[in-house]
Length: 343
Image 1 (cartoon, rainbow, N blue to C red):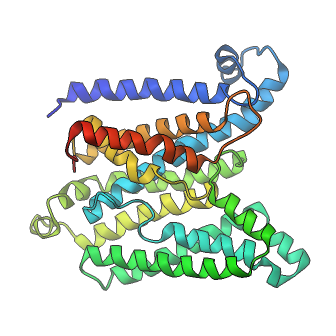
Image 2: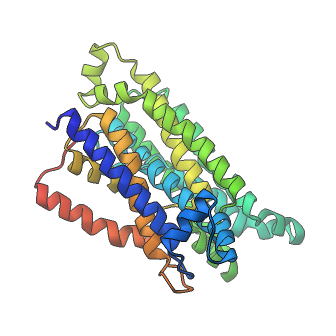
């Protein structure tokens, strides 16, 4: 078992890597900007080219901060679900939150033609997609909460969440069948996920809601550690299972639902980051895991976004493709090397 000093050095190392990845992410893109000018732009110093300041402040900085929020938020929500259900295959979207968001977006994009010209154009605006995705995930959350209050078995909630996901996926399939090629293409592009389309105002909203979700996760640390011992043992220790289960579900829904609404459904991160962190830190203590997952998720998504930018090229690859292509082999390698899963 690693001691406190080991964890301290590990967190210092992660912090340094996070800062490096953050600066590198800001420097890479269709226009390569030297790290010296990146640092000067962030600290108010002189930059070689005036247009670089605009690129950094209005495009790359919001995108990099979004990557940190999305990576850390999905990682933590995945950790919460894996602990709650004691299932290594659980992720932030097992409750149907992402499917609800996808249904909301599908109704706006592929069902907008029902409302006619001007209204359809208004509904297809950026904020309407965010609101629709948020409402979709929120309605699924309310349904899951209503069910969880009447179901004692936690695994039953997992199955019910998967059923909600199947229902919403079926409705999206029906909408896609009747949609035009243009509407279908727009929905598919949303499904690729994107980190670079948020304004400063949208980043602030995303940050505020993610902060609430992360604070709820921190409040739940004691309950999460107790749940690892099993629900019956947790009850014998005086843990209020229903209240803490609701708190964990709300925290996950806030993180996963909001991130999906603003950035689209980002694959891999929520499922794999907790496993990667456990393999590296070799602990199941959430007092260590939650900050470690926060930093590690941010680092991984910054790296994936830097690769997706195809430096010096005008093309940008879908972030979903990069997260899976880069991340899945790493998880396989870690599990093969360790030969067992820390859980």
